[in-house]
Length: 236
Image (cartoon, rainbow, N blue to C red; front, side, top):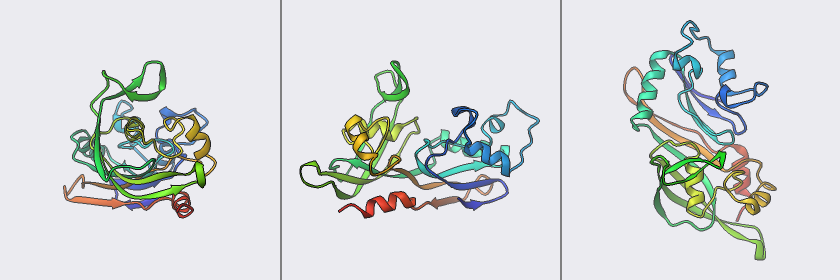
């Protein structure tokens, strides 16, 4: 879903289940980068360009995370957006549903790195990179009936850094893993959660950054996808 379009960039609402970059997938898997290549033409003369290597995709979302993503259509806009992300001037907001009762608001500031014993996963390790997440609890839900019931918390998440799997790892570390997270929710939760939701509950909902040419502040918002809205509607 294209939410906003200009000659130099796009803002899209990525669906859950779609891998962003071709390098992260098996060759037979259709990725967002493949979609961009099919619908938009680039000057392919400079194959060493980071813009070309990434197919204009400025930043990433995990496969099962839905929501806002910036795609540059020119080298100049790609460089301008990348600079904002590197300098941490981009404001990002996610919506997540996590296990347990969260405090009203808080922050998680612990280093994250790839786990040496499992290269597919990240975790809080002393030699990891600085990772900082703020959050605010919106409301609580009751999930399940009787002795099997538990509290789930809907939270707004404001990542201050952009590490791989940052939000997912931080909430696992805090003892409140994201609902239906196949890597970090724990075996028991995963088995139960996936009976009700086929993806993890994490959505990139708001994005604030500077226009690459005018330098004016621009803001975008993507509502929760239908499967997330439908799941919440079933909860008390």
